[in-house]
Image 1: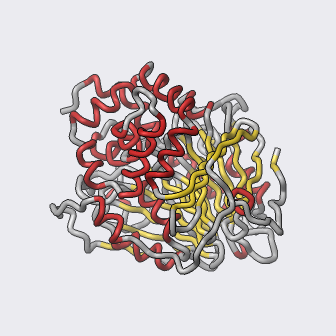
Image 2: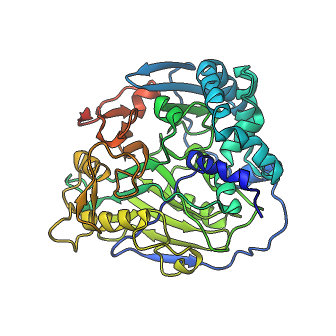
Image 3: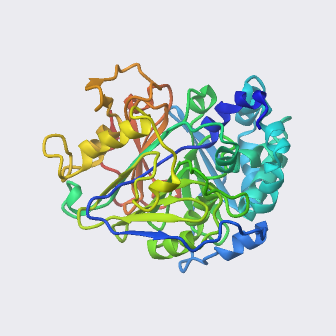
Length: 462
C-alpha cells in the first residue's frame, strides 16, 4: 500500500509520462502473445544496448561544434561525441538552466522524486536496466553541470519515468495525441508522410519556460534531434537524419507490466541513433523484453510508411498504415487484441474525447468534418490546435490550457509536426495555450551544419 505522501508526486507523472493510442482505417494489425511476463533474468545495461545495436550502413558527418543558442523562446543545444562526452557538454552548457530546474523541483512536490524512487527500488532498477547511452550521458551531465542537487540519480530517475508511472498505480493522466498521414490522405502530389504530435503533461512552469531542442550526434551513430527540456536524456519525440520520426504516449495496463526488461522511452534514443528503416525497427520493438504499457508511433519518411504500436510487457498490437494512409492514437488501447489489457475509462475521459475528435477530423468516412486528402502542414497544425469537444458540441475557449476537453486543451507542452523524409519539423512551445503559438520551422540539415537545398515550406504557421 502506498504511503499517502507519495500521492503528492502526481505531478511527477505529469513530468515523465505521456500516453497514446491508435486506430487506422484499412490497416493491417498483428498481436503477439509469446513473451513470458514472468521472466526473471535481469538484463544489464550493456546487454540492453548491445542486443539492439545496429551499426548504421552510412558514415554520418555533421558540421557543428557543441554549443547553444536561443531562437525566440526556444533554446537549441548541440551535442557531439560519446554519450559521456555529450553529457559533459549538456551539463556545462546548460548549468544555469539545470540549476533553475533543481530550484523548481525542490520547491514543489517533485522534491520527493529521489526519495520516492529509492524507497520503491526503482532507482536501483534503473541503474541496472537502463541503456548504457542513458547511464553514460546522465553521468557526464552530473559531472559537467557541477550543480548542487543535479545528480546522476535525479537524471536517471527522470529517464526511467514510464516504469514509475505503470508500477506505482497512482492513476493516469490521459495525455498526448498523435496522427500519421501519407499517400491519399495528404494534399501533396508526392504523398509525403506527415506526423503530428501534441505532447501533453501538466502546468509545469519549468517545462513551459525552457523548451529545448537537443541536437545529438553520437560517435559512429546517426545524428538526431529531440524536443524536450534541460536535463532531458530519454526521448519523448524526435527525428533523425535517416528519415525516421518517433514519439511515445504513456498507456496503462490492467495487469501486464513487469519490473524486469527494457525502458520503452529510452528505446526511442536507440531507434533514432541506430536505425534507418521501419522494418528493422519493428523487428527490434517486437523482440524487446518490455516492462510497461506504452503506445509508440514510428514513421519512415523515405519509405512513406508508419506504424502505431500498442504495447504491454508481454503483448503488442500494431497498426501499419494501409491503403488509406491514415492513423491516429490517444491514450487507450484500441487494437482488438489489446483492449483487454487496458483499463476502463469513463465515457467523458479525455482520451476518448480526443480519439473521437481525431476520428471526425481524419477518418475518410467522416464526410462532413474530415480533412482526409487535404492534409498539409497548416492542416496538420489545425488538427493539433483543435478545441472542439465532440461529446458536448462546445468549442473550448482560447485561454483554456488543461481542461481535458479537446485535443488542444489537455495540457499541451510541445506541439510538433514532422516531415521526416524532408528532415523538417514545425514546433510550437512557450507560454500556454501552446498550440495557439506560432509553429516555427526547423531543418535538421541546417541543425547538422549541412546545406539545405529545400528549406521548410511554410517557414512558419501563425
